[in-house]
Amino acid sequence: MANILIIGSSGQLASELKKLQGDFLSHQFYFASQADTDVSDPIAVQIAFQNTMPNFVINCAAYTAVDKAETEQKRATEINEFGAQNIAKQALKMKCHLIHISTDFVFDGNNSKPYKEEDSTHPISIYGKSKWKGEEAIKVSGCDYTIIRTSWLYSSFGHNFVKTMIKLGNERESINVVVDQIGSPTYCGDLAFFILSHLEQLTSHKNNIYHYSNEGVASWYDFAYEIMKLNHLTCQVHPIPAESYPTPALRPSYSVMDKSKIKSHYNISIPHWKESLAKCIQLLHR
Ligand SMILES: NC(=O)c1ccc[n+]([C@@H]2O[C@H](COP(=O)([O-])OP(=O)(O)OC[C@H]3O[C@@H](n4cnc5c(N)ncnc54)[C@H](OP(=O)(O)O)[C@@H]3O)[C@@H](O)[C@H]2O)c1
Image 1 (cartoon, rainbow, N blue to C red):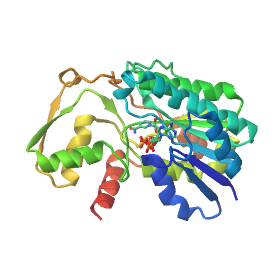
Image 2: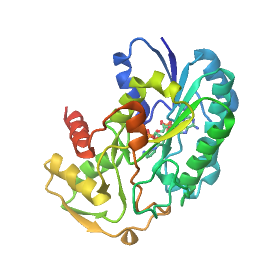
Image 3: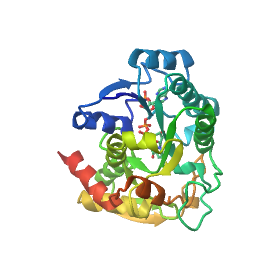
């Protein structure tokens, strides 16, 4: 039996982990929300570790407001860089394995083939930079870690693109969606299941970075089109270039990640994004 501390417990990914805890009854789960444990406060992080004596800590806490980060660099850094560092320090002290979630936004998007873990990072936004610095802080901390970079997360919990599209699809006759940013949508339920069902193996492959997203490639337009289709919404989706939809933060135009490393180390197959999207939408209709 392992003690598992999940930090940032109100978010999308953490909520999926919480939902799955009943399938992993041999473990003792502890959930810490921002109100319980602010990761930017080293003392609060220390107390969370002391109270739960974790064998594994899963860091789902993050400053995820990509556009707002452009004007709130200090807070994004406190959470995504120093927060990760605070957790890593305690993980080292308590001999606890840290599973940290990072992002495709550590890349600049100039690749023409899927990004491998060892490809050069070059974040083009404050959010991406703060997440990359979080990775670096963990790598030099001396703790046992697994860093999982994922992309375009959605879930039946929390706020995300899927829910926004369903809302807009119910309100409008047509919407414009960016067609020239390409990536891979990822269902948090799939990532949560991968993590919980491979905890022991993660320790035997410690100190690695992995890429995990659903299989397949999509533009935001493709993603929105599929969401409308699966929800039987008649709202028309029109493709537009990113330059017609300016945002405060730059986003990589291509952030598809190569998942061969995680698939071969753990002998897993990963569902296609359309299959997982259908599953999530079914849950939303229940
Ligand atoms: N969302 C995406 O598309 C995406 C893509 C790639 C990678 N990721 C990464 O995947 C991970 C999980 O993302 P997600 O979508 O589940 O995020 P999310 O739904 O935005 O949840 C993040 C959680 O972090 C908490 N948090 C924020 N500041 C905190 C602090 N100072 N101390 C403790 N907790 C704090 C938030 O608390 P409140 O609920 O109180 O605000 C929230 O519950 C993150 O590391 C993110 O960077 C996300």
